[in-house]
Amino acid sequence: MNRRERQWDFMFNALSAFLFFVATCLIGGSIVCLVAILFEASLDWSIALLLLLAGCALCELSLAMAKAGQPMLSSLQAIAVVLAAAPAEASPSEYFPFGLAAERRPSEFDCQSLVAGNPDHTGQYACVDLPDPDPLFEQYIVAYVSGVGICNVVAASPHIEDNEEGAVTRKVYGNATRKMESQFGPPDERVDHSRGPVGSEDALFREGIIGQDREIFEQWNDLSRKYKNLDSASLTIAGGRILWTRRLQHLPVCR
Image (cartoon, rainbow, N blue to C red; front, side, top):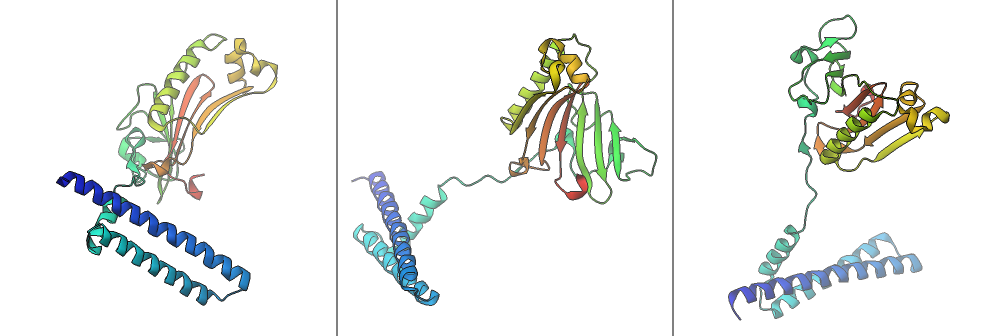
């Protein structure tokens, strides 16, 4: 048996012994719980018996590995290698919507407040240019809370001149949806809701959207599991514009 075959044989024996150890602990633990319930045994007695079974299982693991011709330390090292090879959940990666980080201030990007006030006060700001703009949009509305940071940013496309069927709007919206799906995957929510006969008619798409008789949007939730600096995102049609919203922080003051 060559070296590679011995290594594979060793790894197989280590994995088999470890699985046997886990199975013994699970079965033993189930038996202990059942006995404790049936005979109303005390918690201390149950824990002691479970530890005894675990110790026996560990001895069996040691004996099994000794029969395989490997010392206990090497066996545990092999088990560690097997466990380390298991896929771990990836930590969130950095993501900055349009180049924005939550701790930045509107004044850093020459954004103008929608109401009068001191620079960087709590409120909404209109921004024409951001560090990483998207060519689909011409304006960005940033919601900022003093002492907290940027809560969200809404990107607005230019006003779309369209026919009643909304051919251009549908095309632009479709392109934006595919772009977001390429970044975040399929949306968690996809809504195309109509109110009344006007909203349900595709031939009157534009009238339905402008009159708010038809609502269309996509929603991506819990993005903080995958990305730092991003909580959720949504895409919708409002009037004659496509709105792309990205929430950077999920805090009560940001709602």
